[in-house]
Image (cartoon, helix red, strand yellow):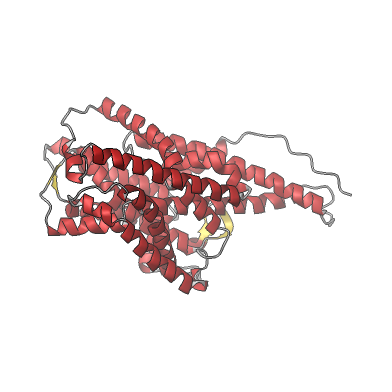
Length: 427
């Protein structure tokens, strides 16, 4: 049962689909992040050949702008799952504390409502406390990798903890719609300015990179500054909030927990979502391979990215399947699940490995990297395989991810002692 038991609850069933999806999602994250590391290393790029061009098309249509909305949906799913379990256990705890219940008295409906409301408040506080610590973790990570998203997800959790805990789905839908419209408008304006200024191709964008010397202090300070601005912009003008709310809403259904019950629907969503997401990224793929930038391309690609992320989630859930009677996974599903249950450790480990390859190795050896797009993608796959092996070793020893353990410890120890709320009098 070890493979299906939650680290946060010894009695809660851990469904395989979200964990397997997280494991493969981290491969997509590595593939999406490696161009940033190539840029940070200021490595020279090899002339694009047919393989590089083909990979750019694949990455643009199926990975860029798709992997991080998928990440956000799975984050929202996990957040809602944690809240539901906390409310269920907290409600029982409050009910058991009522006078006379241990002697067999049945709680009144008023007492049940009170217990559930108090447990919901506790869940909201837990999410906010966890989110605050995630912001700190993200700031530390940003000293190495300024495109960190842990802090962004922590900020979103702090801001919207109450809505998620109380399941204010109508408010969430309105805010998500506003963010999507604002995202489209802003990116359209930015695209128009880029076209008017003549910055229309990815080649031209790369040529603007200067060769100024970077010190360790400037690297850290610039990283933190960039991360802070990007975190705020991401919360206001990215698909993270809509994707998070969508993932949280899915946790109150059995679409992901029991995909075997919805094969036809998930197949349609998976293939249709990836297909529509790919169509929406064609103009950006043309730009990425040296073509001009179309004004509406970026806006269209952002929305299509969320649709493509839904397609990825549906197909990965289908691949993982529902819970097994014996609680065991095998083969690649098991390996991916190992990573998915230690997603923070795997995500941060990717940054350490990328930094070793793109920053430490050239600095120590003096060897300048010459990478094409396909070779850089190969490094990303290799990094993911290393995290796969790392998580397999941790699973074999029965250990949670070290960063997950650190986060849980910090959240638990920072809880403030509050006076026990007074229950309503029994009628």
